[in-house]
Amino acid sequence: MKIVDIRTIPLSYRCEPPYGSAGGMQARRGSLLVEIETDERIIGIGEAGVGGGATSGVIERVLRPMLIGEDPLLMEGLWQKMFARTRQFGRRGIVMNAISGIDIALWDIAGKVARLPLYRLLGGCRDRVEAYASGGFYQEGKSADDLAGEAEGYRARGFNGMKMKVGRNPSTQTHLRHLVDHAGRCEVEPEEDIARVAAVRRALGPRGKLMVDVNCAWSPAFAIEMGRAMEPHKLYWIDELIARGAVDIVQPDLAWSGGFSECRRIAAFAQAHHRMVAPHAFAGAVLLAASLHFIAAIPNGLVLEFDQNPNGLRDELLKEPIRIDNDGMIRLPERPGLGIELDRAAIERYRSE
Image (tube, rainbow, N blue to C red; front, side, top):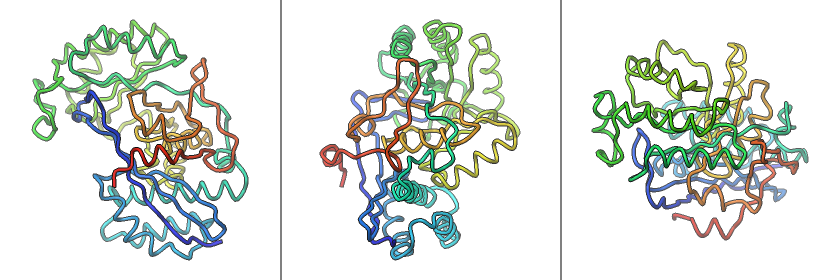
């Protein structure tokens, strides 16, 4: 079997109204699909980090020529080939985004050839995965009570945990406000962030998992200060590395960090250091499906991020969307590979070319 074509499909979804984090306001959501076709008419599906729109060029002009004619089942060899031949300008960022999308698609092919769902092909540890609701963004006019109502809605649907945004605090002078779009919108004092966290804790109850995401906005000293201030609210984790490289929860993104091949190595390294893994999965439906298989196949998988902001690239892209059960768990698909089928009408609806 040989690779005969590699295609990219850029997608875009307009967020109305926009929502924000400490990293900026989100007016659009993007996704870059990758399709790899073989001479046996098997098509693998992947999703790459969009890289500001530049990733597709790397895939089509740099990586595609070196992979056409290759055996798609030699996934590790192809990964190392891509990594080695881009070492002068790659290693991270856009090139790694590109390698990620291709690697996910190659593993989808492998699952389809083996007639196994990917999590089983990878050595599966479980067939159901706990998901948490990823939301709690800043929005114009959105109060702490509104945020609590959002959390109550997630709890009513079966989610046992929620991650919310904090850190849009320019008065601390640790927020890189001059580098962020839409400065001045939805900005709050640290005390208001603490009140927002308290409101969500009340809504989730004492046993609900509550995580906060700072989006790299705080200095190490201020992150420690805020961590202590939020300690009474029993946070499950803070999404920020604060001192000396210490981290309790490892959060690789399959579309950014090298696909299944590299993220399995990251998970193994984390396990060797007694760390749990909860992959970042804030993009489209293909990445969500890939992350679901990934976490089900590793022994130190913790919980799956399930973005709950309006996003057609997550909710409409699959003929059978990924959904949680009423106990907050997601059952793994048993069809081969990623076990998903794209809705071509939705692709055309959101195609950004």
